[in-house]
Length: 308
Ligand SMILES: [Zn+2]
Ligand SMILES: [Zn+2]
Image 1 (tube, rainbow, N blue to C red):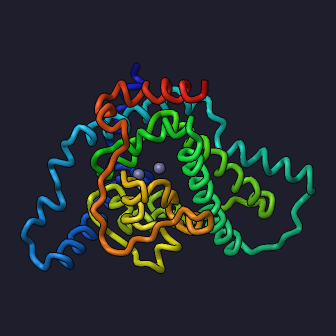
Image 2: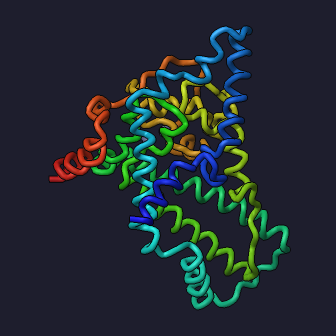
Image 3: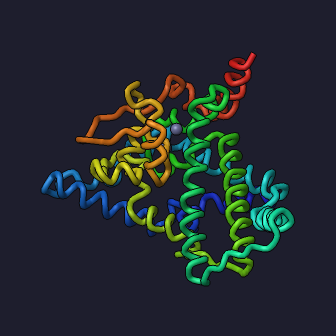
């Protein structure tokens, strides 16, 4: 019980945690970008306050459920999964041992600096690719789609919608993170058997820091922030993720990447934004998903019914 209460308290403090996307400096940077975009297009301050603090959206039942799901997922992870999960460090060690027994000691010679750069780049690319693959499977396997629909049933987008995921999806992403962290670190420990201190800013990988500070929170918002047709082939812009949430069939299964757009480009799921599009959000279940119990239990019922 004490653990649960502590977990709820921690979940409510996500704004103060540097490894969370809604860490307050990232929210502030997104806010500044939103203000600049507003002033560029409107050339006046009129309407700015309701644009940056859209209280109707923030108080929508969909947003309130986003907050509840953030708390529920955090509690489930802390109380039920974390104690049993094999962690990345142990997995990295096992992979290093396994590679040594299979291939012997590595003969690759690299400098300390090169090791850090290769590790940072490899981790960023492989981790991002694994997120694309998992997201792709959540869309393409009908059983998994029932659970991923919870993210897509959001009727309004706010930065907290990032955490609006079904606990089953949350667990799959946790497992992905442990597995990829262990795999990449294990292979690197075999190549370069000294401790590597990756580039980190505020405790997160430098790539994630740059991504977060450049307005990542606008991906779940009403603010249209496009990177332009060239850059959107390489990096997923906030506008491209807004398209991902669209209820218009022409946008279905598009832009499933997290940070890099190259996977969408390679696997033909890329949608490049041209001008600002009026996008409606939600899926068939959105109205039912205003009820938290339905959000949690309905996917199980539908997923197993599909599989019969
Ligand atoms: Zn999706
Ligand atoms: Zn989303």
